[in-house]
Image (tube, rainbow, N blue to C red):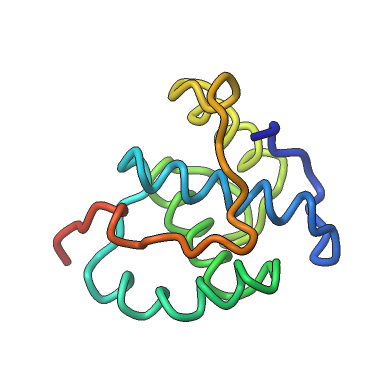
Length: 119
């Protein structure tokens, strides 16, 4: 995994893939926590976005949840400078940049790794 660098353009497949890998990694570390309803609503769309390497609504929702949980003051669902800095800080804290993290492209990512939070 590489550091998250802004701006992330929707047609930059390398940057989008890296961002999606970061979100999956943080979910697996229970650093992004979803409600059961959020998990259910996002799961199918998330899989489609990963397969197509798209920065779509599910990816933006996960970014927004991260921003809310870490009190990041950027436009919700977008990776601005503050969000990138916080993502990199949290990822580094988990050793993400030392660890080999598989790209999500073509790999079905299991949302069950995300911790469920109460409503």
